[in-house]
Amino acid sequence: MSQISETPVLSRREWLLSDRPQSRLQARLGRAYMTWRRFSSNRLAMVGLGIILLLVAVAILADVLAPHSPVIGNLGGARLLPPGSEGYLLGTDDQGRDILSRLLHGSRLTLLVIVLVAVIAAPIGLLVGAVSGYAGGWVDAVLMRITDIFLAFPKLVLALAFVAAMGPGIENAILAIAITSWPPYARIARAETLAVRHSDYIAAVRLMGASPFRIVLRHVMPMCVSSLIVRVTLDMAGIILTAAGLGFLGLGAQPPLPEWGAMIAAGRRFILDQWWVATMPGLAILIVSLGFNLLGDGLRDALDPRESGQ
Amino acid sequence: MTAAVSIDDLVVDYDGFLALDRVSIEIASGESFGLVGESGSGKSTLLRAIAGLAPVSAGTITVNGQTLAARYRDKAFFRQVQMVFQDPYGSLHPRQTVDRLLLEPLAIHGIDNAEPRILRALDEVGLGASFRFRYSHQLSGGQRQRIAIARALIIEPSILLLDEPTSALDASVQAEVLNLLEQVRRDRQLTFLMVSHDLGVVTHMCDRLAVMKSGRVVERLSSGDLASGKVEQTYTQELMVASKGFVRRVIAPAPAG
Image: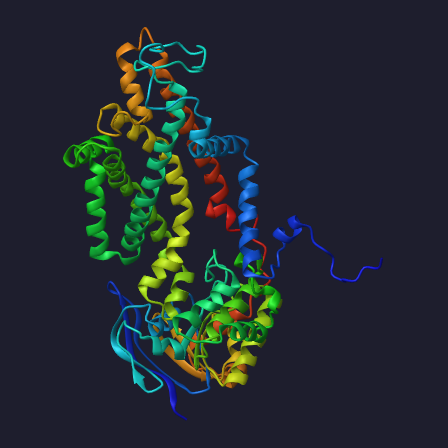
């Protein structure tokens, strides 16, 4: 068989790494692939990513994986069984509910909290910070003083006040955490904006006649996004802990929802005799927090604009 | 000939420091005008003042018969006047492909036919379509400056402000970029206002030039005068000597101490 095409056929890898991309898609994928290569060379970051992917998988498949119902227990025959008991791998709690099943279902709540907080808080912080940094003057002063006021309160105390005012429940806990976690993002976005606002490439866009709105949205914000992603990922552990803290205090998820913080609170009463009731959800929180921290560290190395720029 | 740019008694005041002190120049349409002077003489400030990037405290700037406000510039102004920056490493957005960079001015001004325009603009600056989807870090300094020129030209301005467009490039690339600028000026009958500290570049590129020192115009010359050394001011003569580069002189050996 004779070779018909004259151009050498590129492997997928060569296609991605080509320094003369042929299309918008190839350029974008090539850049993403470079980031992925930097990220995947970091073994701890891959462990973090594995933990988070596992969490997502567990949350999706909780119904299939859980051997028992997370809310209906066996009060008669299975109260406070130790880990390793027959049919109850991680033991049972004081209502005879399987702790493993509760943990598996609780991953959904954890994921819900994380995703919603990130979706609410990060864009607010990004917008406030970028506008404040680019506009300068009194706009900057007003926005940053508001940010300062939020920063002056301890996060958990402010969240407590919000939840106390709005009533306990998982939705209000999410809202409270989101409201208290945007100020650091605004600070980061502002710092990044200040670094780029006097650069020639922003002046060049201005000289094309772009409106300030367009400059902030399309030229300044993309420069802030990567450091913001890193910060949000590193904050995830704190968000989980805050949610667990609110749950522990009875202001987050309400019984019988299997929220991990609330589960620890329930196990507190017999922590010395039946240690597993409080320890198992504690371990779950620990592992997921660790996963997000490792992931965040890896992302910081992979997304650092100062390194990926060249 | 009508004046494309006319500047009258322009003063730029940075908190008490006069970066420009009553500067007046007039540039005819289709002319290439040079501004020379040492660092800090105010030549770049003059460009930035025209573009609306420097605080004008007195004087008037008139472009194509329209007198501009001190700070505000509208979209119509930017369709007439574009600028090429000194440092090609800083003037291209690090997160955008060449395609995005060239698309942006078209999108801002609502110009259609983006696809053929981008290809034509790349072609005009001597870069093929293969450069279209590269990021700026995948380009050399000379290629970046070509992209910057393509970006300035894509909305078809009549006046181009050039802020030392070749001083960040090495000698061979400098010549390429200067030839490119010469050619687009001839093809499109553009008016150039070019800042440089390199007298050779200005003599080559410009018909007339003004010599600036400490925010003032000290002398106006034609490039022919400069080439033949017909200058009046001692400052201009010093600049000419300086531009000839380092001259080795015989120095008597110092007595051993």
